Length: 567
Ligand SMILES: [Zn+2]
Image 1 (cartoon, rainbow, N blue to C red):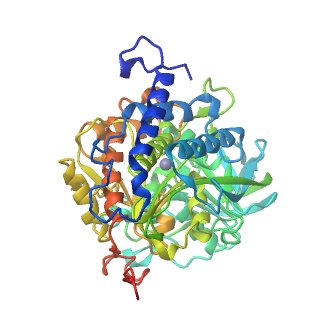
Image 2 (image 1 turned 180 degrees about the horizontal axis):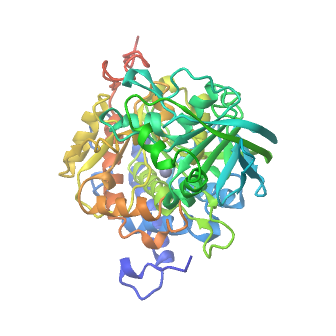
């Protein structure tokens, strides 16, 4: 990665105006602290204009967000992988920014919540041998042809001449009329499956992610006792797919054994194609069969042998928690969540740039959240608390936020609702607001009002995007009944969308997700201002927005009200 400067955005000649920004920021905070002294009394009532707040509009500076992203996504932070020096720098930076913003340490008097994790790194010299009954065999190399990882934090796993069964997409979804296993016993066998889900109507929307995500498919295979999984990954998605599995991180308090088979593997499409070319069937033929309604699993007359050794380490990672305590009902709180982690050193040896800097994903969300925290704190406390959670380990399965909901800073019974900030920058101001989770809860009205203050329209995501709702930190809270949704202007149609499509194709989970590739931070600032209006209203009422009864989450939280004083 090259050194980049602010010049394009600021017009200055390649000199980053960072010190000046800082000075101005500090002065402004001091001024607002003076203006806001009166606010620390419980007089700040719902909807009433806050003293000091009326003087300045609720503005967030795009330049300040850019500054955070430039730092967090710089090579000095090493790609922010949990358990590295990059983590130390990252969590220290966020805590310091929360402190300067005027928040209080949010986790039992500390900025940090320890999150115990396990890292599993497979040996790079691992091989997988696929042999035919005739005796012919092929030895596949780790990282090049296949990637085998241990799904269960065990240092050793092995398969010895395990029968390979092609199970189509490896999906079992009876409610959608699909079961690729058709009752076949795969215990001890190696299941070969295609990536994602078939291109059919049934799997067009959220179901594509619910059933097609690798973790869902490997969990299904594990449940059926498979000894190994091999997912066929297209060559052009190979590097990207390896980023996510090369190092596996797990929560030791999570399911045991976790929902993955002992050997959780990927195989490059061209490699599988070559292996089958000489046999009775071809990969193209298998792919075609998998798409047919009457698909049945098939033995490939191949046997798989591998010995997988892994380095298994326990370590502590950290969530960062900042709090703006409520004046009247401090246990009731609004939540904002952004994950700070990225993938660290993620490219293979020879690559010139090996650091997955995670600028858009998700230094942008963290930068926006820091400025959101500053805006909240500068305009005084509200009747309810506002809690800011910078979570670890999202990329490895929402590890930090799942840990948090198991041991929350404030009891979850008091969590009113909130929002996740994930991949927020890139677009300019003035697009619609896409809400992941729209239509599920009464929070829609809050987002709608906040959007209309900016002259923006609240819209649902495109059907093929809708499943992202189930992939981000918000889901840890949703599963506990707390409505936390993910709003973002970046997913709206138009200019932002083009940028996002290009990003997904070229940079997502790759070293090229860099600060210099983000064209504008104005949209992130606009979304941040919207979240301020949203959060301020929610932290000022005694309303408890409920899940819609007909949503999948309707039964997770009983409807509740704030007890009136004297009750
Ligand atoms: Zn993310």
